[in-house]
Amino acid sequence: MTFVRVRNASLDIQLGNRVRVADRWWPRLRGMIGHPEPGAGEGLLLRPCRGVHMHWMTYPLDVAFVDSDGRIVAAYHGLKPWRFSSTHRDAECAIELRAGTLRDTRTEVGHRLAWSEATRAAA
Image 1 (cartoon, one colour):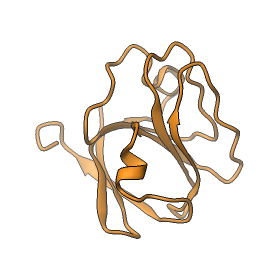
Image 2 (image 1 turned 30 degrees about the horizontal axis):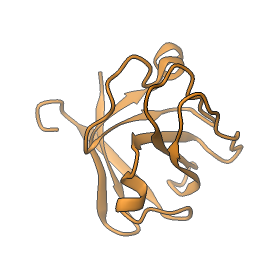
Image 3 (image 1 turned 60 degrees about the vertical axis):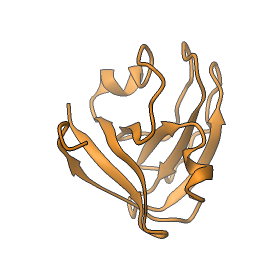
Image 4 (image 1 turned 90 degrees about the vertical axis):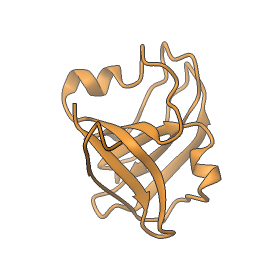
């Protein structure tokens, strides 16, 4: 499993230091289903991704859809279980984070995100 550190480059603030990468079909489809609620700094980077579902989830998530330049094109605060996001044609990937992370870090549509590989031990 690959982990990345995600930061809001526009504000120079970290969003997550232990974000799993889901870049194959099954991990993207499964997403966070069956995983415990992410702790502070934890999340999931879905690549490619233009929309998410919250079926079988038991907790809400913040979701940011990001284009190929790293810009947030859409953001969902506390997307609830059994809901869908809209489809975002400009999105290349989505980042799912603990609910409240986007608000707490003042992360908004238009901000640029950046990520770099992190080792599991260093996270």
